[in-house]
Image (tube, rainbow, N blue to C red; front, side):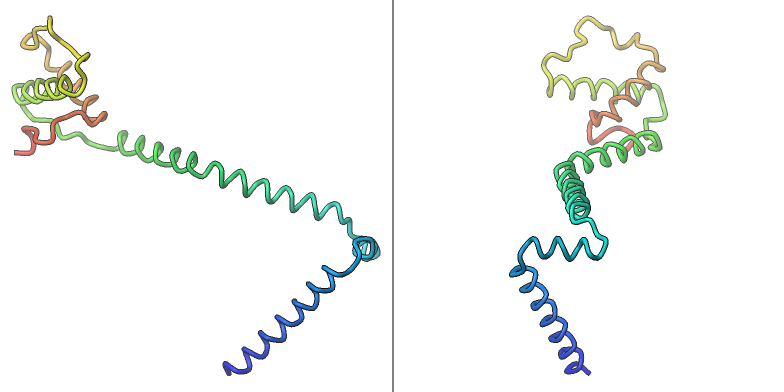
Amino acid sequence: MAGKARSHTEKFERILDYLGDHIRSAPGDELIETAREESRDPGAGNTRLKSFLLTVFKAHQQKKLSEAREGYKRELTNISKGHIGLPKTPEERRTLFIAALTNARQRQPAFTLQHRDLSEFPDEHIEANLTKLAQLGLLPKHSPEEK
């Protein structure tokens, strides 16, 4: 069976080689005339091929952009669906918030709250800011809710 398949493949390859040689050696005028006799427009084939190649080339050029857009969409979905496990008590949330701010100050010296009294900061504001810091990935790795 494998011998038969190989012989068919070899015959097919020989036919393709013959056709390729014929097309390469035939004068261009003869090929155009043959196409016209068969009611084909040689220019239409070129236009389709050019359009196809441009589409493939553009897709290749924009592959990284497309991947970045998909990643962005995934992140948005994760953020909107995600539940951020914040501590249960206001005291634990305040401790986590202060730890996050301390951590952020170490990363970014321009980030300051030097004239703020965080003990007077309402719990709702702390919770909202913790949610934003979590979405930005700025919460400390070992937060109180993990204990």
